[in-house]
Image 1 (cartoon, one colour):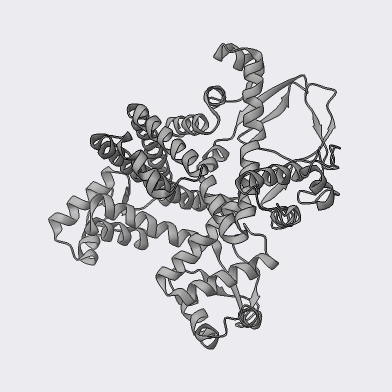
Image 2 (cartoon, rainbow, N blue to C red):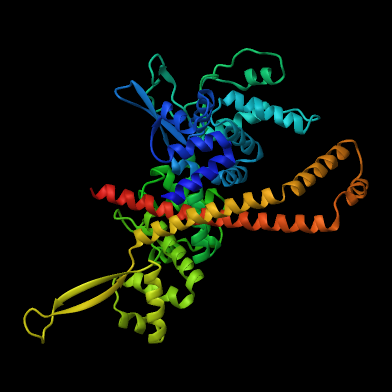
Length: 515
């Protein structure tokens, strides 16, 4: 897992700096105690403790007692580290669903790792006041937004410390992860206006991001987008409504939803004021989506008037499509056709592939063995007694098949490596052009100060015109273009990684349920 280790270290360095990334690098080899970390890194104890606090408060590391509570070991959580790269998408999702103020509140949680509701609101209020000194900050609006974030489970409450007299603190065993403390907007407003300096009642109740809830939103976006592309925008809207109804009666990460009555779907369409073409043709849409090979929907065993959402099948279908695109991108359309045939048929002989794929024999063999060489397909040898030959003589069959779990794992490792390479390239470009980027930042700061002094846009443009030479401007454009391409590549790789990790999650759940 060298690729994952290297990627985690790069992400930690980008978000938290050198010391936390060094600690993360050491913990990526396995759990370690504080003395072992200090000894390996040769850093002052205070620095190591600060780094561990940063990692633990941001949820990318944890600690546990060993030797019957006499010592503590620290453990890195690579899956949580990877979610850090999704934070810009989390912020965009929140702004789109709940508004700009909610996004600012989430930004404060991201900045501090863990924070109380009151401190979150106070810091955002100060920020809004600094941005717009002439406008009064609406603390009650920020309070309502914070409550909404907790109610919708985007924030999760950290357990309170029950006893910290020993080497390892004992946390209160509570299931109240989303219970708000006693607090009101009036007390917070008094602190914001400087009318009070008293401790607020929730000063010892802190919250962090609920990554699972954000990932649920991203998963819904992927499913809705897949249905929209496969059918049309009305089908996408129907899928969105079905997912909302699913969460009212089913755990969000359950493989299959509980039955959803069709009458309830119609009522929801009426309440959402979607009484249009979709409402008139709801039965046809449900029937087509149910009969489709993607199997997003199915009729409930409770009767034909109930629908279930099969999230596991949906994720499998999206994963199949994704792998088909990867094969087509790397090898071409004909290899994709061969890969799809082998996957759908389970086991295929070479002659069958050539006939079904309608590819010339020579090309079919070439592409099949190329896929085999790159581990996208596997070869199984099957022996059975020959009917016309003597005893002890077996006929050997060579069957091609797709081990989907192995292919997914292989592509995940490739994503880790590609993401790490993209981040390294970005760091290299930033280092190579550091002086130019710094100069551009100084010019931008100068322009901002001129604007604050009341200078017009034309005057500012004239004053800044000659501060950069034409070659510098050309080079800066090229550098920005490279940054944009790398940013897009990282985003697409993370999308791929997210879908493949969803596939693995539901496969593990299926194995667990079977056992």
